[in-house]
Every structure is written in C-alpha cells, then in structure tokens.
Amino acid sequence: MVESANQVVGEVDFQLEVWGEPCPYPVVATLDALKTMQSGETLEVVTDCLQSINNIPTDAKRHGHEVLEVEQQGPRVRVVIRKA
Image 1 (cartoon, rainbow, N blue to C red):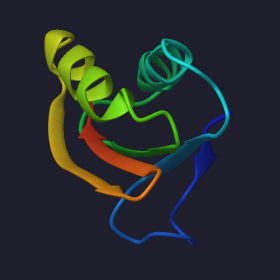
Image 2: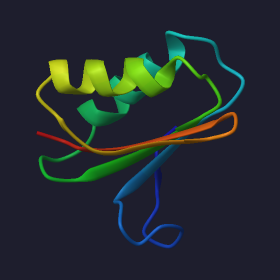
Image 3: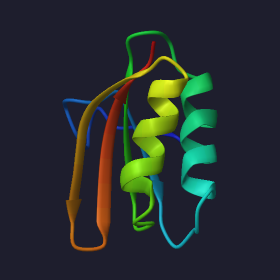
C-alpha cells in the first residue's frame, strides 16, 4: 500500500515499505505504486530485499522514471524515484 509521506519525509510525495518479501515482489509493488502517481511526484521505497538495490532502479529506469537516490544501510535498501 502506498501512503502519503508528506508528514514523514518532506522530500518525497509517497512512501512504500516492503519488508520481508522476496524478489520480485518489491519491484512489482514499486511499479504498481508508480502507476497510481502523477508525473513529477516522488516515491520513496524502503525494503529489506537486498536484490532491490539493483532491481528497483533498473526497472524504474526501463519504464522511463528517474532514480534520484539509492542507498543501503545494513539490510535496509532505500530508493527514491521521480515518476516520468
């Protein structure tokens, strides 16, 4: 489920947390969330699926979206995407 993140993180429009789900679910959930958003809005995806550090940015770019930030801290992967 995509939740408004304006109160949580001021720099993004929406936040998607995908914990405990193996690939490809985090990528699928990310692309589904982006479909519901308006062009120019930003989505922060946070997951513990380590493959997502490569898979989410690759698929987002493949669909024409802009990847603004990718970071990993231990098992936590964070990706910020601007919808095309």
